[in-house]
Amino acid sequence: MLDNGKAAEIFGRMVTGLGGPADFMERYDAYLPKAAIVRPVFAANSGFVTAMDTRELGLAVVAMGGGRRAAGDKLDYAVGLTDFIRLGQSVDADKPIAMIHAQTEEQYAQAASMVQAAVRIGGERPEALPEVYRRITLADL
Image (cartoon, rainbow, N blue to C red):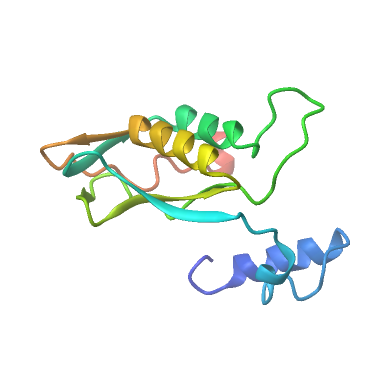
């Protein structure tokens, strides 16, 4: 479904059905806000990605304004993290672990520090985990 474009087609119809632009999937860059700073963050040392603290990664986005601390907080839809390295991949000074989308240098610096702390780097490649943890069918319900 992801490889053949069906999921994107369905998402595009959903956007249109909710009042969004009909050409959102073809021209999303024209509709989505862009951060002032889009820059990679690199690991502090070389090795393999052995773990990620996803809660801490989420808090990095919240710190930039991409998530709410309180119900009334306004969201900045331009900030966030993209292009993450995957578990088990090797990292070095030339290979980013993620891209940070921030509005200020201060936001970038704080997010970079949080991302570096959240991504664990080890000397040995970890054992590969299955991409699908468990399949749930109607019989399981």
